[in-house]
Amino acid sequence: MAGSRESSAEHLLARSGMQRVPSPRLELFQFRDFLPTELCEQLIALIEKGRRPSTIADANGDRYFRTSETCDLDAANPAVARLEAMLAELSGIDSAFGEPIQGQRYAVGQEFKPHTDYFAPDGADFAKFCAVSGQRTWTFMIYLNDVEVGGATRFKVIGKTFQPEVGKLLCWNNRRPDGSVNPNTLHHGMKVRKGLKYVITKWYREKEWGWE
Image (cartoon, rainbow, N blue to C red; front, top):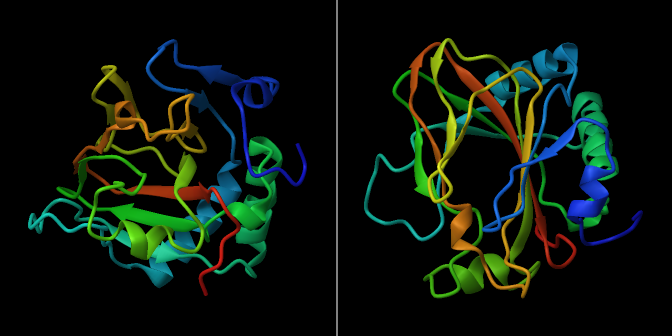
């Protein structure tokens, strides 16, 4: 699928170790040990250097809705370039359709309350965020470390919870089979109770990424 703007369940499941969550409501996958520990450690160091308060589209007035910190990772950095290539090979999606890779850091008490990754079609910021590159299609998220207590990701609609593990990847299709956005992808980055949590997030779009 080189050069493609799309991934698929068939492509993902062709990779040994990829597991699909058995639910008809969404396409959701888990892949343990996707990243080696040494690459996770390099990415954590980059996040520590560049972190800033996280933001959200369509602010809802809840200042505690997303309390993590975010880091925009430099595509020219060797560790980031290596990760980008690994994700392109795994997903089958050309990197041109991806947003820049981000890292997030969660300290004790920090969380991202239940949300979806797509931009709400009726949201105030929909045109702003989708005019150039279109809607988000796939999400690829990677845990970079084990968390002492807390920090799980819970998909509330299907009642599935994933615990952070070094190098474990989660990915899901933000759409239904007909191409409409899928509210069943609602998920909660739960509070860290002890320790720190570091994750990587890569979002893909309908069109080539056109923002600077």
